Length: 544
Ligand SMILES: [Zn+2]
View 1 (tube, rainbow, N blue to C red):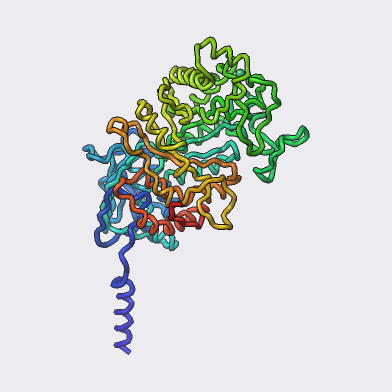
View 2: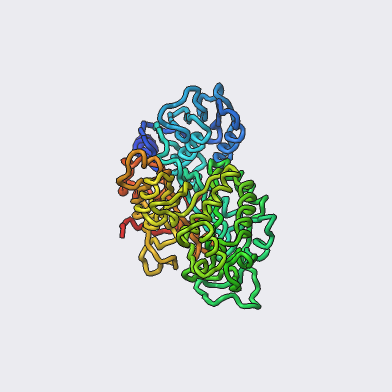
């Protein structure tokens, strides 16, 4: 009997300790340097959360880190400072002496059996260190454990690019503030620091502008159709019930929410095309007297364009942008400029007069002139423009930051021209495209970006000089919502491909490894499910 008991104890000990596999270190995006050490730290209800030397916005930072801690671990930590950070404590501190090489967003995370320390030069670095710490505890989060083992290790980490973005089109389908916040949380978790908010387009105007109330009274609403593919135009008796917009108060709230998560918001106001919603509300800004309505489905090419020969149009845009600039503290505003089909300009007397008056060669130059006028206005507001790459030409006079969707060659031309560039080529970054070729895949925009293809994205085009490379600020993924009707579909489209994008813009190029990445996807996806997101279950690493 005694023998059996002893054997049982030995067996139990072997199961509990001897055979325990070391916890895997799974972090997305892959950090710059990870050194595993033996043992683990255990987060439990006695763990102290300590802060030191956080500086001016210390209260906000410590509150944010504590909120993340409580919502992830479902534990209320005791709080302390550097003095009290001894056994069973996690200490977040801004280094008194600048830590070399990690810059403004990097961090050094050290996990020892008795204590965890996160050090950085800034509060943004501490925030990212916290996100990594949450990921290190992922195994027990998945297991619904009440305590959380964190494998001992040392991590030194910082981003490859300063611009790490994700976009959301809220015009083609409207997404409420609760979802926008959930989306921002997701971006923050993967160390994305820019949210490109596509607020206006043919299918709905989504931002309150006091001076032009019809934009949201008329321009934010269209008939409810069950399918995007219903092509017939709006009928006179159809109720305009589908849509929505954000009040200024809601926008300020979202801006604050994002800022606390170290995310800048880039609002986009489309100029001069993609403007059916404006023309439905203010038809006097069109070149013709066509009865424009808020668009209800796909059509190509889009004919709606604002009249570049009408001074009222310039005044309209300037007034709108003045109000937009007041809402968003980030210095950049995206002013569109893509797919501006200028058929109307070619036959509009006012537009032709403008071409003549300004000594322009053609309608393409008319668009450049218009965008330059807007740029000057932004300048007077202390803001700078981001424009889609449609405007790029060898002899352009434009100094704005170029957002490249059309590919590497256009990006190179822009960088060689001296413009800053943000990369989001359709080939790798359009997450509204199909992610698998499975027969039961849901309906998407025609195009294909597998998870593997998204992972193969390198924001830095080859063949640029060192000076030109400095113009490549980073990259972003775009989620256009023609076929993305609701939050569930948005999450399905962006996950797991956001995992890939985050490594492309954060991790060092030499650390990227498709095989290792593929082994992390399931774990990461399950974590996302645990956190309330609804990722796609497809994992297609093949490139074509
Ligand atoms: Zn015109």
